[in-house]
Length: 402
Image 1 (tube, rainbow, N blue to C red):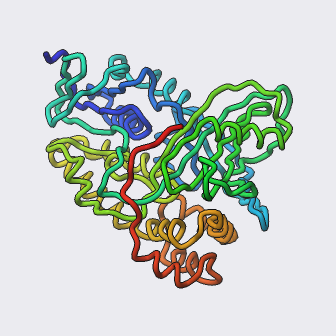
Image 2 (image 1 turned 90 degrees about the horizontal axis):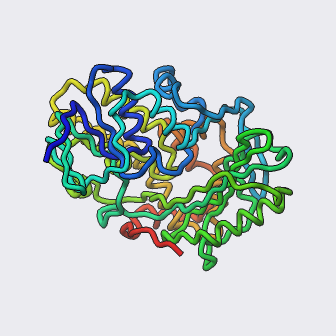
């Protein structure tokens, strides 16, 4: 049974889907858009952060309706051999603010929450309850699912938003505190571990324990206990828990992207977000990519759905080719460095120039940047680095939870 007709139906209310809906509304306010999300809120339970330099004026304008926490005094990194403050501004937004802002901005009837899609095609979306939405264009922004055609490791994390009775004393974000024990998230073997700290207010602080690990094992209890230990070391024992987040994200080191596109393709359906391959292979920073895709789709929304689907597939292939360098570095990280020595790779990287680091996170490294990262005293042996160049890693498997 078809119960509604829309110009555009977006399936998946995460970052990619939400920003596409926002960009379409801003550029085409008369379009009848459906933003479909199986959960009860947009964005799930996440926090997205980025460097102030990641977005141009148009990109910043897209995000303007969404509340953001801003730090203009730079950010800190900490490693066993040094600490450093970099002057670039930093930005962050929560999924709660993302949901509230889009709920207020998008026209009534746009949000289709708590509706799980059973299937989709070029003409509409079928739901698990037997109903259907018809649409002139369908955009698939559902979550990334592991594939045998993609290879790599994993970024595993648990975060906690805490409210203290007094000031936490943190002036700037600490986007990488790697001066911590380098131990795997499941307590067996090594991993690259760091703690991420955001001062969200005078008494509010967000602490996330993150690992670059070989297996997608998320042991929430263990990682939560390590946040307890980190908080205790900073005098934050007495606190109220405002919120949690956790996740397992792929760190891509190789694969057959054409075969992956064949696997996820639905004829005539536009694919965006992580499912379409639009990720940073190494850092998982997604804001610049998601903003760029949202603006591109809004600009070309007048095209037939089949043509728009082809354009986004081509855009994904260009993105895959342009980010091959980061997959190479991922192979160095996972295959050339022993797990408990991976910290040396990042320790050396963060000693480089500020602009190079910014461009790296935005997946916009120049040719000179790429040479500079690899040039000099390498943090891994030349032999192991050469061997790692020809490895691709294990096929990505599903998340394991303990």
